[in-house]
Image (cartoon, rainbow, N blue to C red):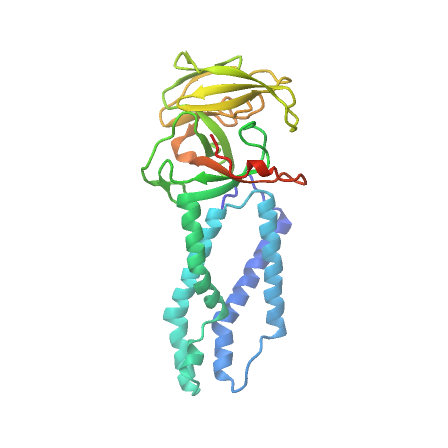
Length: 337
């Protein structure tokens, strides 16, 4: 979970503290106190009204806190999965090696059957059940495929605001979740790839752009023409953009970047951004396909992207849905090139 540029208000800090206290109270009661009451009593023991209030209060505050953080993009889902996985393991370990022996001794002392003492507390039962599910999701999301939503028009006409895409996480090597540390080398980025990367100035934010400049390249952008090491990247005009999305009559062109041929767009009411620089070693230069309406490596807010910030290669659109508009069904399943 990244908290970069996320400032908690006083009310949020208070609610966070109350949520943690309620969680601790509910956890101790479920794993320690409730089993003791059940084993020491001759009659069935029901959950007290006070504990019901604690449990409901925790759930309400927890959902409210998660919603607020997701809405403000302050939540890293990989971190949540790692923490959830660790907690499941801790709950099982504590119960198996510390609490279960105590329950067995208490059951023997009060002449209760052993199966009653071995019954898992609700928290541990859920932890055991969810552990494999969380593990599978974490492995798939961290090492195979991760879904993303396109939030802007900067990659039009290749990607639209509202496209949901799959990103290949192993294309450029296997990386650990949360830290993004590479542990296995597999492949290297190629010019023309559409890549998701963590913004160098704020790693909690993911960007998606097209790779234009490789380490060591001399990149020049002049009047919407890209030059790499003195050679112009071939462009062929290809009519006007006629779809609805606020870019009617924008100029389209087919561009060749390495082995990749793709379409770029030049918005008529925006000036071209000229640029010239040498890409440092271990870094990459990215541009959006909507060339005159993209905050990319030409601007200091993004700049050159270090290799360790690469997340993966965008491969396919699996859904399209933009606000209250109807999905564009024809985009579903489209390969990203």
